Amino acid sequence: MGPTTEGSAFFSSPAADSVAARYTEPGDRVVPEGTFVGIPAGELRYPDPQFCTERIDALVGTIESLQVAGAEVVVVLLPIHSFVREQSELHTVARQAVVDAVGRVGARLIEIDGDYVDDETFDGWHPNETGQARVSTELLDALGFG
Figure 1: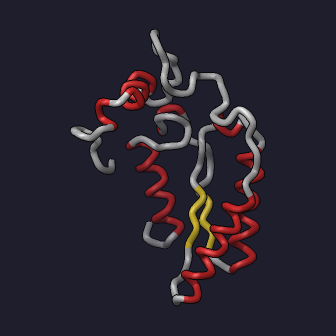
Figure 2: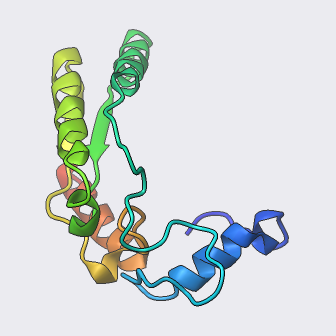
Figure 3: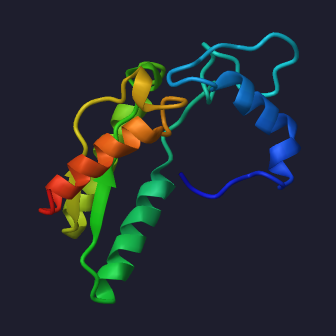
């Protein structure tokens, strides 16, 4: 599950308290009582989202650098929760831009099908153990190890 935050500055920060209060169960999107220091449920993560083409340029540059060095590059597009995607059309635009960019530079693309469901993610983006297990299984299958 990654490194622990216990004992770190984050562990005792308002952000940690906010995360702990909001995401105690898979799929939780409930604003806790009291002062909230994170993004309230129901609000967009980015109130005025805009597509950033520089990130696509950086992705292409990274892939090309790896290819020049002799690496076989595999880009994996992970699912997101439908709750997240429905907040902004930019997720669809960004995903298509990645697909197009990867195709232009000849890297391999693996798309993990389907959306995360409530019991697979903490916050719509980040998978919990159930989501990680599904993604890992599908990725291993796509790579020919399943």
